[in-house]
Structure formats: structure tokens, C-alpha cells
Length: 119
Length: 110
Image (cartoon, rainbow over all chains, first blue to last red; front, side, top):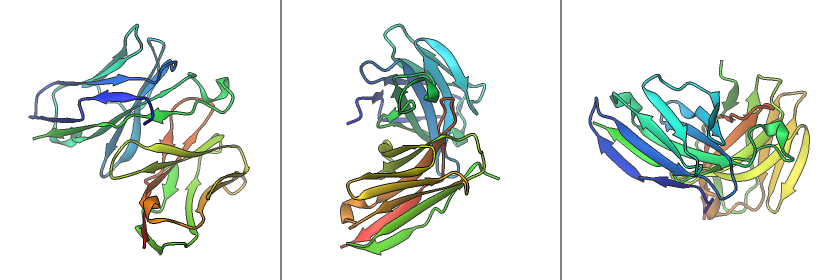
């Protein structure tokens, strides 16, 4: 158990709908990352938040947005869902914001994921 | 061209074999190198972490990084059926995002 929690475990919805995925980081971690894992794309970085502020953005679609709340949990919002959005969505957390800013880099610990199926 | 290349396998070995998993990369800015293990699309679990070139050993696992060749390896000694999983290499610059390889699916047969 990494200490990172994600809800829900599974989500089945229809095209055009909107869903919210939730992540709670490990105790003491200030950074939260979202990754998408699809069968044909592998694990892809979406976005990072550090202590409530957006720090880095990857190939995140405009239909997707995220935020980190004062209690450090994060939510990933996916709207106008398409069939191609079906994937595993993982949240990870780390202590530091940057790899070079902490001894040992900023080791990222992953949650169990949310499996999203868009029908 | 992908920044990180990893042979997806599948790789099948008998119990007790030495397993060698490899990744190559093109971005010379990568400084931190990791190996994650993922069982059946569960959350990736960090196995090994290495900074810059060199070797690191942890039990049956040894990670090697050769920055001059842009090549990293993970060796598993005395492989066990419980090692059957997908192994993902991941890399990081001084920033934050992890760039992953495609993953190698490993099966260790009893």
C-alpha cells in the first residue's frame, strides 16, 4: 500500500458525460500528479499540482482539468467524454515539487488507479 | 521517435533465471532513473531509483545506468513466479514529470 488513495476504483459512463476522479496523497506529500494509462499510449503525464498550485502540464486535453484543495487532495475533471478517454487514471504524490530540490529526487508513489470506461 | 524505448516483450523465463530488462533514451537531460513494477494494471510500485550513472543493488534487484550510452538496465536474480508483472522504466530531468517506457511484460514459470 503506497498510502495514496483514489476513488472511485471503477467508473462506467457514456460519451458526452462529465466525471470527477479523486485522489488523496500520502501524508506529508505536497505534490500530486495525474497520469493516464491507455493500452496504446502507455503511462502519460497529465498535470502536477504542488501545495494547491499548478506546477507542470503535460499532454492534458482542454476537456480535462484538475485542482488541488487546501487539504491537499486533488480532483481530475473529465468532460465531454469520448470513447478514446477510456483508460486507467493514476494519481501519484511526492514530497517535493522538483527532482533536484530534494535528496533522492522527488520519488513518486502511485495510487491504485481509477478505471474509466466510456461507452 | 519516443524519448524512452523499451521492448514490450513478452518475456518468459523459468524460475531461478536471471532476468535482464532494458531501456534506451534520447534525452540527455534525464538525471533520475527508476524502475516500477505493475501487476495486472494495478498502481505502479517503485522498485529501484538511481541518480546518474552507476549501479545500485537491492536484494535480488540490480539497477544499472550508463548515461554515456543512454541505456539503463534492471537485473533480477533468482527470479520467482511472484516477479511476473510488467516492468516500467521511468526517467526524470530536474523537473518533475516522469517519462515512462512502454513496459516489458515478464512471466516467470514455475
